[in-house]
Length: 251
Image (tube, rainbow, N blue to C red; front, side, top):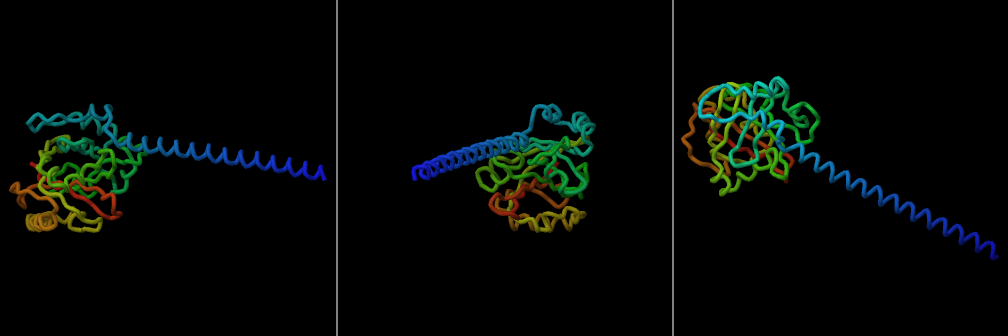
């Protein structure tokens, strides 16, 4: 009988050791997973910010319409680079690329390496030199005020009123932007997300009327159907298909 109880005790102790070992392994796995999650999140947002290596290619506004050789240098690295976008007094200060589709740069950095934060990119249907009447630029909505994470701020009146300008540099031209509208819509809004249809003043007048009719924020800057427009668009964090669009006049 003592032998039976001794065997039972040994088995119980062995079971406890196995249980403790299993718990320890689970804790280690959880810690490793949590650590990887923190590292992965840091890596995503670190990759989303502009680094000094890219900033050296940023053009400088001189007040004159001169060629921007720094962008030409970037095109030697990646010929898809077509512009540099700056929204004044924000962290939106990035090169702009244009792929063969609107999917190509969703998870690809300017140097074509994999990046969850992707790149800021021009609609593939637009003219690369921003000569269209309506140009559309996309970027991920990310926390930490990187990529297009600040675009939804323009839905608030105070922010919209205090942030009024921006610049688009192309290799051969500098466009100065006046932001005049910010609106919420969805990804299926064909009037916002089909830049190819705005080829004449009649269609541009219709676009301007539509923007004004649904805008959350709007200011009168004297924009007309003969002006060139640029729109920056990103996701709304709380809605899968929700979009925020910031619209400006380029001159």
